[in-house]
Image (cartoon, rainbow, N blue to C red; front, side, top):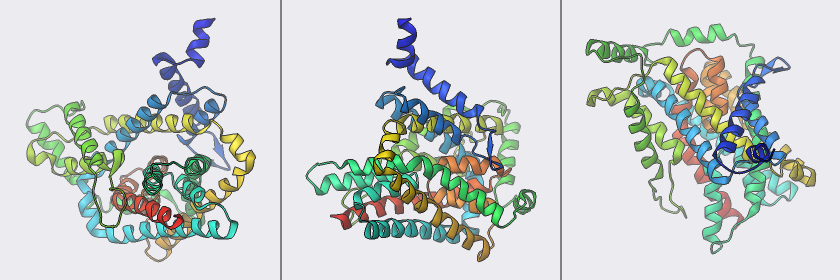
Length: 405
């Protein structure tokens, strides 16, 4: 039985593939389970991963990091290809409003985290970790850690990672629950919301997508199969763009778009302008959906497998308060800004769901939004606010660390 024990517990490629497959299988098997009438969908993969890692069945760090980032790139790139044709027209029609709302969410979350630090005496370093776990933003956590290291001659602080790990799982769930709650609060009927999008199909890029499809047919280019060279060309360019350091005056470390932001921007540009330079940008809906679903499943599995070790012990040793703080940091900004977006700005429910997902830079929330939205509306809103939100999240992390000293 040594081979079986090694397959389950030991290192190696077979162990990693088996573990990822089992976690995804378990999570997807539970995806139709409803709690109080609500299904969390692929978020169950996260909890399956936490369960396995809690009992010591783990991926090695390098494999875990690769699977998480590659899955995220596939998911984000497929979203950009899908919404790219209508992105700029959509941005002109409502992008400023959406970005103001997203920035308000970010500012409110930072204020709440700082108030918890003031009134509870919790270390600001821990609260920064809790904040970025609550909004599921890894680049912000990395920026905080790097800024601390630069300020303290290369030293590190474990409080960042501890706070992040404890708050992250409920952060994912909390964002989705806020989207569900807003639907219930305003008694939203999904069919009526979808009609608003269909009425504006031209603005959202469907006519351009159809035009690209017809041009490919006229040239004899097959549309039934994905054109992989152009997909990987976009991913290559996106990774390069995401790794370019951008210097801003007063910021202690350079800003980077990261392995999500870079591919997202490149995919939007390729989808919109690629046909003008003879790039085949059209991808069938089924191929795009397959790439997106595989990506989010890999991402969720890796995150869960990396979050479970020590999770229970941290909570029992006082970390349960951090979980509570993180949950409040998650839901208060989402609900406040979501309600304002509906009541004052009269935005559609799908746009609000996408805006909340983008402002928190949270792929699982977008995956959930897409599962209830039969159009591109949530994805368009997500991509509209994502770049500025990512920049503000990273900037806020550095400012908070500078305040903590």
